[in-house]
Length: 83
Length: 199
Image (cartoon, each protein chain N blue to C red):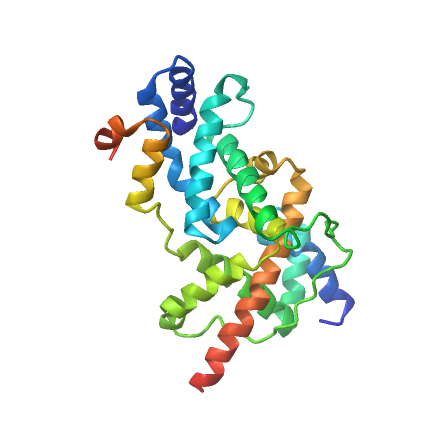
């Protein structure tokens, strides 16, 4: 990750990954990625990192905590109807 | 859009003092508020307190809510502030007040350069890997963590995240990028080690 082209990629990577870079810039970055193994690894593993987080099971409010929440808000009477 | 419309109708009912509307609001938004609180505080009991505090504060201040942002964005904002107050009490040194937020300056240069994407799926789905993923988020600096959780895990837009955190859109983009880079470094170290043990 020493070359100027690698730094240019890093500076523009956020926009590239989020689909906000111009077509011209994307083409330029992709040309660099075709010939730079290190940058290709960074881009692929960044995408994989995001994908892994999207697949992560979501933590849920424990049932006992939900009961206490409704009680604290004086909404216990609605617990059954909204369950 | 449907949810926004529903939230608008819900808001009006809450303002009229309709308790069933409050219950609907809690049912609809408490899962997201809890996930945010848990990932910010890293503690179930603290997260539960944050959720309670969020809805108590929101219902109390409902008349002052101008509706410029969505209801969920407003609730995330209250929850984030409540979580931050708790973090500052428990770990005052962990909540930074300044960090580099300009692209191109102080650029995080990737150091882990092993290609671990091609590991078998079982390595990514193991409970150990999931614990590592959660731990990596918990150990991000607070400002990066808040943006990452809202944008990447709760799927708020850049604009909604900026409103919830009261920062500019550019700051959200920089923090999200830095969070992703830091997580990639951390996970690269973990999965590279797994890859080595499987050779």
